[in-house]
Length: 404
Image (cartoon, rainbow, N blue to C red; front, side, top):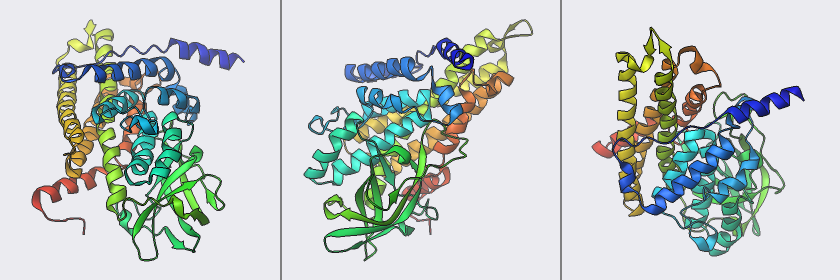
């Protein structure tokens, strides 16, 4: 009881002082709707998530009680039309929500971006009308959560080499295989799974919890994204109804287009993590006294802070323009790759520099810097590693495929 009361006191003392940083007056480019979306998401995060996120990360538990709140701020499928339960917002609004969530924690953003971009997006884009009406409203409300099955134990950067497969059994499909590193898997009601048919063509299938032979064991031992649930998807002769096949598109391009949407959200989200680290370091530099004055008055600390806000501002401009292109249907996969790679690299470097500015205090859970640093080690790897995205840009500018 004493330990419980102490935790309540500590959590109550965790005041989220973040207000935002806008060095190039980006707010002037936002619509009133964008600002309302941002303010609602920020207020909810400050009230509901910031006080508990450190404890959730320490315990390596995703706080599932937050799911209705995430739905209430439009974090699940914000760009999905209202007729299917979405908010009917634009892609910049989606990015803004992801930025506000990751400003608190990458795992929180990951939970929402998987639901939006990797589950709701393919059902909306490639599903039948019956599938849209069956799944999307429940996913938008948070009543159901979903996950995305592409990565396999032996096939990460080369998803086309997947071995998960399904066979036509006449009145149903028989699905076999396994997927790994799947966010939301342990508690998801549905999984959008990518598998090869008997001709080797990749298709998407919606697999529902409770189907015989389908299991989702939790992965343990993570030092990153500890406030997010990660698991496996195991398919042992799972009978999938034929109406659960996504009819709109097949081939590797289908799941990769979903990753485009998710990577777009990551590009925005990473800025949020960087902003939180910068905000923490800036505030600390004004309060921490050494050699008779605040450490922010020393040249080396000002150099670090000036470089941080410069890189953040560059990323903000890059990503806002990408959002405009996405709204217009013009954003290319290569452009999205560039933003994902640049922004996550920027964020992880700022997290490390901010941690150094706080000295020993930077490794404690009194500040979010080590948690952001650990989380970003995953973000820089998943949905396309740092090096793979570099090669995507290289192929785009030269025309030569260096993957093979």
